Structure formats: structure tokens, C-alpha cells
Length: 225
Image (cartoon, helix red, strand yellow):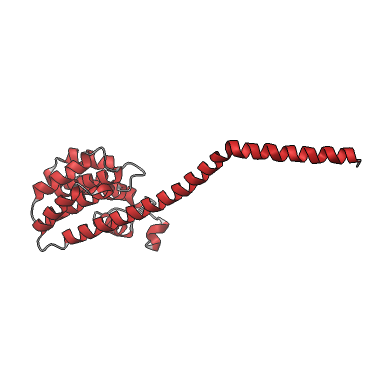
């Protein structure tokens, strides 16, 4: 390489360095801001996580203290005081409150609690369905069979986690109405379901046998799972 070429290369390198330094002075604050935001964001996330854990712990302690009261009535009063600041636990508090109301003999109050929860648009579907099912069970034969069957039919939609329980109760409604063949049909359908707990399966099997129905030859029945 000639001296001229070497000189030109050195000058070009210096020019590139000057340009890079100029860019850094002009735009370096952007990189600094990105780093600051990243560090600050990570710190905020950690703070938020710690705060959420603290709040959840305090809420759990408060619920435990409420349920440690001597009487069901006192427990209900204590739970009511927590409801306004329950956050995501409001549905669970309502379910617990309804259970305590039943325990304390406050059936109408329990039904009001469950019906309110079931009708809420701000509650997750699974809690609405749970409240609906518990209210149906609590009312029992006080509901006309057609209305009870219609409500259970909504819970028995494929994919609903309460489908097996709803089918079981639909068989009971049929039996209460004297429709033995209808009850057998529903029980047979229930035992053919793939997602059925051992408890429900056992109850359905016993009832089906008692009604004189034939057990479906399914692997899960034979294995007892």
C-alpha cells in the first residue's frame, strides 16, 4: 500500500470515529433513556409483585381471622366487612358467606347471596355457574321441574365443568317426576362421559343399577377410574 493510500485510510478512519462520536453525542441520550426505562421497569415490576404478595397475605390473614370467629353469624359479619376490599377474592367470599348462612339456618339469605353472585356480570363464569348450581341444590323440589331442568340444562352444556353434576341432577329430576326411563337414559349418557369423577361415577352406577338399567361397557367403568 502506498503512503498516499495509507494516509487516506487513516483520515477515513478518523472521520468515521468523529462521525460515531457525533452520533453518540446527538443520540446517546436515547440509549440512556432506554436503559433507565428498562432498569426502572424491572424495579417497578419487583415492587408491584412484592406489594401484591403483601396485599394477598394481608387479605388471607383477614379472611382466616374472620372464619375463626366463634359463631357462624359472627363469621358472616366479619366476611361482610371484608367484601368491599376483597379484590379478586370477592366471589370466594360470597360462596363462603352463603355456606355459613346455610349453616346458620339463614336459607333465604343464602339464596339471595348465591343469586346475586350468579347474576353478576363482573364475576368469572365458573363462579356464576357454581352459584347457580348451589342455589338449585338448595332450593331442591321447591322449583318446578321444568324450570329446574331448564337451569340444569344450561349447566350441562358440553365443556362446562359442572356438566357431570348437572347431568346427575337432571336424572334425579326425571326420577322425581316418575320418568324412570328418562332417568336411565341420562345416567347412561353420564357414564359414557369421558370427564367424570370417581364419586359421580359411583353414584350414577349405583342409581342406574337400582333402576334396572344396563351399565355401559366403558373402559373407565371396568377399571374403576
